[in-house]
Length: 269
Image (cartoon, rainbow, N blue to C red; front, side):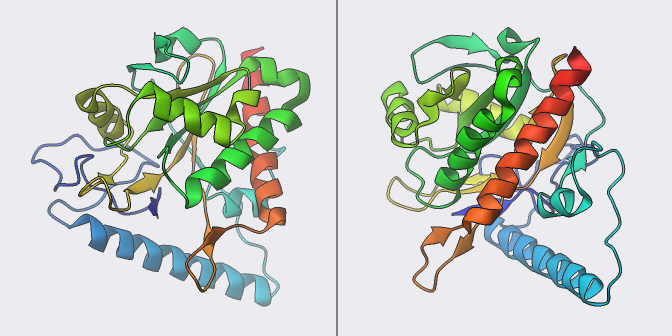
């Protein structure tokens, strides 16, 4: 189970934000201190529902939705709105040193020179993570020759399943190993929590058998190591609670990811 990357955030350990905590900056998820994560998740869903309803009303009336400023020309307004795509102020992306599914320990800076598409995933997730994984694989193929300039990476949000073997098993299961530049990072829980905090990812993991509730945020980092865009992956559910996203929307998301990554790679060139 996940929350959205948009309004509603807590400290990464699931507690209230600490007094004096630095503002996350424009475009990043944030929420009032002391608000429980579950309430934050509800607030997010209500906010998103209201935004979607407003967007539907605007379309029904035949009025074009406004185009977010700073969006690449190659990304249509409707696609940018679907992705909740937000330009970021090109601040340096927070660094980390973690270990990927192949057992390779590396810092984020090792990927400098490549565009980085970063998500936060649970290797035991049966909800949104497999859908985003499919979008990653499809986006990689849509990039064509430009894929050599893009790295697709994820950071583990499941402290109870944090071994390299867990990352490797998930990567094989979701065909992410077909992406040459794929890295599913894990490490000691304190290091993971630092990464969650630095990227404003709220995680609630009450026990090994409970659902991991976490923010689903997709960061695009340019070749100079700066945060360029933030998107908020989506998922629907059947009446039985099974997660799904229509094939058309999966394809749209994959196209959007590829277009944004290609745009940043072209800028780097």
